[in-house]
Image 1: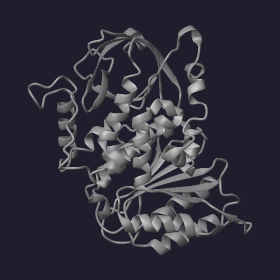
Image 2: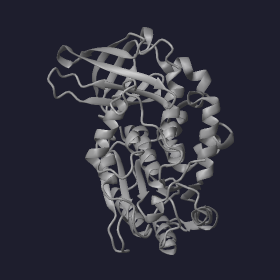
Image 3: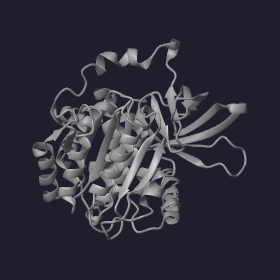
Length: 408
């Protein structure tokens, strides 16, 4: 449920969880339907940090399934002082508990990125490059140690044999002009050479404006029209639009379910290990009956579509009072990723594959426009093609991330 909590500022973690659950269960307003999402106040827009955390959650959900060891999440700096060590959360395979860890330290202090990238590169070289290492950096401003960062990237490039071994994609969160100018400088002017002396390009960048244009295209055309990359950018929409992006993505996909959620659904862990196959009965009024859990367990679920988007949850399959709600993100019309780290995939009729039904529509998807431009960026290109690799997300925790951003 990470993308809900990012809109609830200035609360401690316990208050956040309580407030989110109350909002989802309709307890904050007497007239609310169950699971009504928290309203987004245009006069109190999310901060860049909140958007980055929403984006991080979405990317982890999408990419963790193709990183054999799980994603590494690196945060910096969080406190005054250039000597602070980066905080690293290794081998993340789902989003459960991740947001609480990442947001336990609030954005503060200068932006010292060079040392954090040093940590990322050092660990990449220790692992070796049997699989490539793809790094995504979410940042708001020009680093205070901008020259050190350049030197760090150049030094790392000199240790690799080819540019596909190690790539870094910088994403600007917010519209800071200094950040935009610096990232453009990195993209256009930083010349790197490999261990053999060959000129290579391991860096590319994405402006905040580019993400917003791509999300706008998805909003008009539909995420599903864009195949696998549609799900990837739908999850990442939060980095440009905050929670509203996630609601928009879920709402568009919800319209594909014109026959409700009836059917059989395969449940698996993030690593692909199958747990069971569930049978879902949808009363078409927002209530789900769920059968097929191990040991003949049953449970229930709820879903609702509101003006702000689409929410779905189910209860853990336990009969005692300790059952907890699990919140879902609709990845596409046949797939739901849940806050407990599991993944539900609809079982197609007659043992067919959904891909065979959709192949014609997804061939050549995202070939032009802003979305086509973004899908060519190194991190997203590898993720959308499901290239097995070591994926790393680097989050800027500097004071520049505290600034509210309306996402317009």
